[in-house]
Image 1: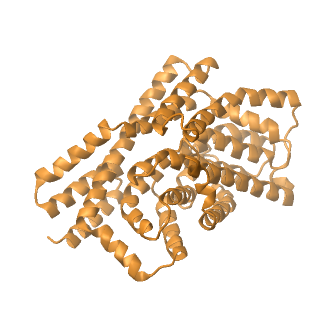
Image 2 (image 1 turned 180 degrees about the horizontal axis):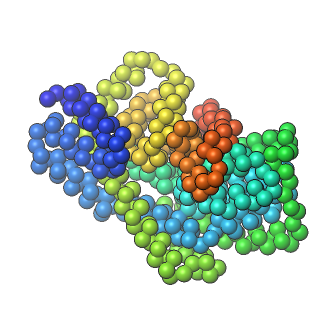
Image 3 (image 1 turned 90 degrees about the horizontal axis):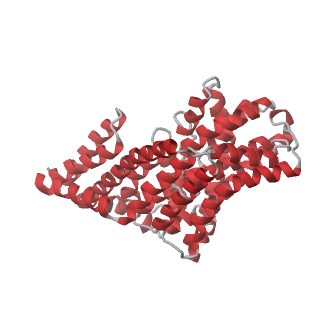
Length: 433
């Protein structure tokens, strides 16, 4: 069987299995093994590649960053951090028209910078912020829309697991990628906040002012939430100053979050044990995706499909902007029914060689890719963050969540184009390493 036929067969069968719900990690691994067997003609060689890939992932210290960041996020989620972050932002800006929605956006960004989980951020913020916004008469569409969209900031801000995964699959510096996401993430939060304030000014009834708190109470709530900001300082500052590698920083982050949790008496041994179990299960799933992605990349390279696709793109003579638009449509479509890490595992081995031929910086492209996955996560009909909000607030109509997210979806597309035309926003901080 020729290589082209093998690739077509593997892609068709794999696509069918993906459609019926087969997990992406095992699907990639066994699809790659089947393809390698059909090309090489040796089952022993195909299984040997699986064993080698598994051993490399299990024995390499580089991959420790994945379970460490997952554990850090799991511990933070068990400490009640989201309530304290929202309370601090709520008391600081809630008195302005639209202030409660801005507070939810800022708290989501801070929570995402500790947990790295988009869906967890959207779910937790729905529980904490939505009742407050409803109590003060906020539009349900605006309230649920900003919660869903601002939850995606966890994908961009460190310790973003998606950034780490991209760095491993694309063989890029994880430290540079984590730093590259900071300014784009802050820019997105700023743009979302601006959209809220402008809409509240045009139509005050959708986002009326909240209560005004004494300065002492504002300061007190900020102090209570400030230890968790220390986590971001430990991670980013340590990497930027060269104190430690991303792997060492991830371990330090676990230690800092654990100490804060116990010191604030929000973390018990039973919660710590529960967070550890959650982290083990999630880490195993993610590392299986890593192994599957590595094998799938080897299969594509051996089959020659990446070389052929690269030559086709060159022959098409697409401009940089045309390629950008093509990838934008492609990834937004994928994001409507797949979560981010699965999208990276499926596509990076195919897309990255094409991207490198255009001269794009792979660190900058990682930021663009994560932003595209963010946008896909709130794109109807199956944006995962939209359904995360719905699952916590079942009384809210799905159509209202969709409609409430549209204005922020448009704003996010605008941020994406800003990053395309001004790549320095993403590359400034990594340039200091």
